[in-house]
Length: 272
Ligand SMILES: [Zn+2]
Ligand SMILES: [Zn+2]
Image 1 (cartoon, protein in one colour):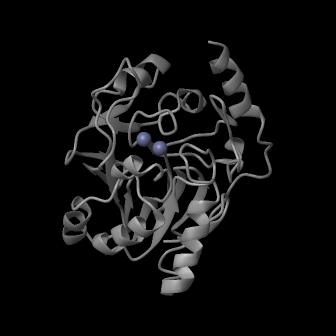
Image 2: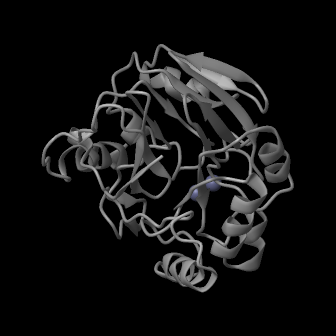
């Protein structure tokens, strides 16, 4: 249990509060917090994806602090969890949220949230929906490795489509998959969050995307805007920590696709 208390403390205390994050009225925007954690402010409400505020993920030191201190997060309407891996479903971070906050996650992982005392847990499988306030949330496929740990090997990673007055797609962890084309054919996506890191060694790429793959996924999805995730916080694979953002920036210049695709540093905001 040593890691739990130490990490909880670090998660709660280490990133000192500035001032609470505020949005203009009627502004729809997203702020990149770090790794796969993004804050979306849509239709006057806020939600968070794969919250991860750890300073250390086991032996891995965090290279960029979260872009918004935990204490400065605005009130949330729900949390989305894409899959059970430790860099996406972090119980130390989840332990910091109010227990009546709805949490949407893959079927099979609910017991972890029940263990923390969360009361509104919405397990979904691919192509199942739930509704929270004015938002429709649809679980969709992701091409990634199942399970959380040796104790839980069955849960299936998923992506999400969040439908309000704008449509947002959150891929979680995924390799390039023909499912993106099908999703793009069925929905008009205003903003897609797509992962760009953890693609080396080569077998990792079956469940992760390189910057090139992510840009191809953006095209397949027909997304009007894309923000890359899963880079720059923890070195989880063989490529250098700065390689994914460096390559991504280079591709943006080379292909002149800025500002359709926007690399946000932690704490930076873009309108949806
Ligand atoms: Zn994963
Ligand atoms: Zn991951």
